Length: 608
Image: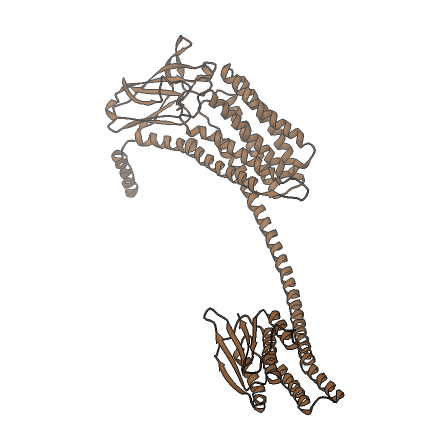
């Protein structure tokens, strides 16, 4: 018992010491004095005050007097929260201006009724008996008016205001940004993903165009909640909002149709006709309602569109149940949920006298964006998988081709080697035929004639042997190495020069290989030098022979064979040896100059 008494005493003391939390006051009673078309009407009323319902969608102004009492003046700041006030308003308390929302002298521009409003009240302004005075300027058809007033300590009132602001403004901005991103991505996909079929015009996927247009329209629709001063004057801005709303649900319907694959059905032309009819009638419906101040035009149009899409959603959902796919079921679920929310909004906001309620569809619309994102991701994954399969197939085919090419290359390489060996054998046989063979044939003719001396016959056979040796040497000549070529000739022919009492002078520089002389050119050059030396041995009757090799400063070299023999006239009928020299020089593209006079014959070969 002692314990229970102690607990009870603590509770009493806590109750006495804890600060008393003031209750929030919700002010509903007001006296209104309205002015419309010059007529003044005064009466008591209950808040909320829906201007369009009370004044048949016509513009005007009003003054609200809203009294309230406090038990005692507070010592802390108070605040007042308006769920909706405007379109433009001034808030007065006990004869003091607390806040002004918009320019009261400028109709059809600013609209502060779309967002909740919060006004701080200094504690010194509050008394036991207080009175709010709200001056209101309303535009026809813009949902102007005055909601109930929530008055109390600043901290508690701010909590209500912040919660409402997050729900009505921050959430709308977030969804608007989301719709903008989804719409831009969808339009970019539509613009860049082009299917090109040979013989047909390029095609784009209209699914993305429908979704992109719908999301951009919805972004425009939701942006109205965050714009206190829209870029267009009223009622033009209101008509644009109606068209944007129509563009959203018409684009969403076409998006659903493409997801289900129904755009390929012949009935698609009727669906397009209905969608265009709804879109085109939205503007005149809004214009009639806002200019004739008769809400029935827009309410009827919204109702017709709502019930039409309820029917479409039922058919679409049934189609998804009969032939279910993940995309179809997902979009069908989003569509059914949205049309139910749209029906709720039409009943609560358009068809009833509810003033403080807001549209829920601004949040349910996110389902379409999420469905589109899912479809894009899944199709991207599918396309990526197909691309990977295609790349794998291409890689396998490329590997097969590479293997086939490698086998072909090996065959070609083997064939080239065989052809090279055949060409080399052919060259050797040709050289032997042209050189050794011709000399042996000459020796045979000399023997058959019986007129040739033993010296002539011996000379012919020596030339034949030298030709054979040089043909063998030519097989191992390094390309471009003229110095080695001359050294081989010297090695083969120097004994014959000594036997013929010809003094050989060797004036040859050691040159690097010349790039312009391949193996074929080296063989031709060898025969040219051999022909010149053979002419000296056979015909010149010389006692001295000089071989020179000099490099040009700018590149290339000069080769000279000089003897002091009896000479000859180069201008006479061409000798066989001289003609052979010119033919070989032309074949390898080197310069050849032959000059001769008694006592000096010069054969000069210019190598580049």
